[in-house]
Image 1 (cartoon, one colour):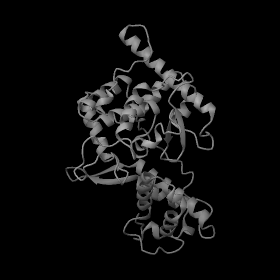
Image 2 (cartoon, one colour):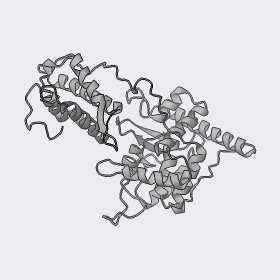
Image 3 (spheres, one colour):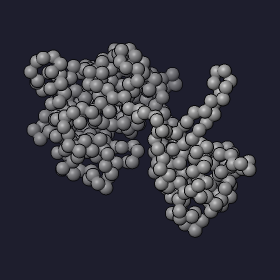
Image 4 (cartoon, helix red, strand yellow):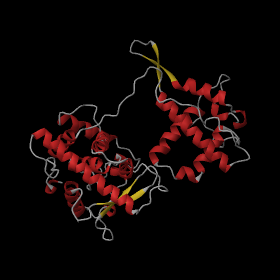
Length: 369
């Protein structure tokens, strides 16, 4: 909450509900990034000034109605700014307002279970029918990279000395992992540990789901030869901790520090990615996430089944997807093979030569990592 919140919120108020939520085990289970977004959203609602000059956070939960919440949401949705000429202009901040309602809804549900006698059972933030975009707004498509753009990006990254980013981009494409996992959760012991030398441990930082991915097929052939060559080289140089670290010494440390900060921030990484995109002559709208989306697109083009795509992308809950299920292992192997075959077919069509086993011209010399 913001500094406007009293040190000891009055029991039964929205401020009090937020304090209950943040003290609950459910809050501790939320990843750092989501905690920060929830905190901002809860503060946005609680600090909203009512017509009588009081804050929404000071209002008793028993007085909350759906109409009351909807009215505040409508006001939070629009914000007034001044343009360069000093004229008042209104703009919509739908994504921020929606996130605030989501945070409030979660706080109410958690608070109701923790303080059943004080928190009303009907959650006024539930089923608000929030829309991701306003009337007439077009759908904003997520920029998706092509294989050729990944190749150019990796070459430029290597040329500029950002070898770790080059390898990470290939990992995002191959294993469909989010940047928060790659740079903030992927550690040396996760890749080919002694007890499982033919696998890699993938952990989803958002929900804690994990699984061991096979690195070889049933015949013992490598499923990701280029990526593994680069990761093996990194493994020889780093004995513990996060796999991906900045390629240049930090001003405050003689050791290579992680790309992700202690506050789980990746702004510097994103700045570097934009620098690489520019150097590679690629579309300016591309981001690191574009390579993960490109991997998914390649999977769809490879005619992966729905089960294969979901297994690869970790889009199922831990209850639905057993960590060591043989069926899942087979799906992952089949998915990797299909994608490499599609990659080879596309490259062959572009060059006019017969398709061979999917070569990757973007391969970076392991010695350069």
